[in-house]
Length: 247
Image 1 (tube, rainbow, N blue to C red):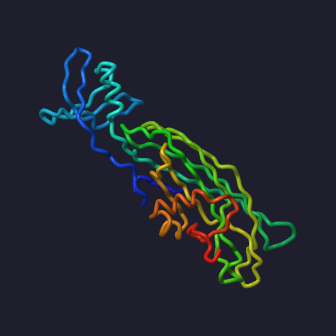
Image 2: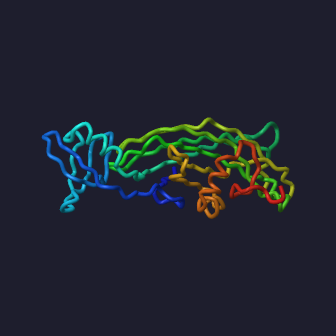
């Protein structure tokens, strides 16, 4: 099982935007001008800074009147929580027919995500998982070291502070020649995965892979990641998920 801390991934996280001061009124009728530093809907926790002296208060949103509660929710900056994601990959291999070298491989993937932040909810987010295979024909043909998308699944969930979720992908089956020599006739062996998180505006807010060429090239460029997300199942590409050269 691989522990992934998505807050530190190569793509940009959501920025913490500067906010303007708003006037709020508590249920006793007292008013003050504040900046909203944080608001967690699931718990009702609010952090505000008073404009007059810079003092910071951690309070419950219920202490404000209805109009102020609405203003606080609208003024709260968007922040990306600290997520821990575990991706567990299972592989079962069996002989294909009477052949001692042709293999049939079944791949299963389970993803668990935990919001480790105490006061930052993850709004509804789209999780996309791509399973990538590598061409075994590379052992007999030097120019055949290519990749293929075996599976692409996505789901959307919100993840409240301190909570966790689990998702299991559909199993996928592939076949390949297991001989690592010039007699290899090809086939596709599981190589790794790409996991991408997108917000409600389809902006990429987190990504991880265990495939070296994807990590070195594709994870560093949101545009390349977007292109990777558009790949259909069965598409043959370079191992970094870029189009094959000359095709």
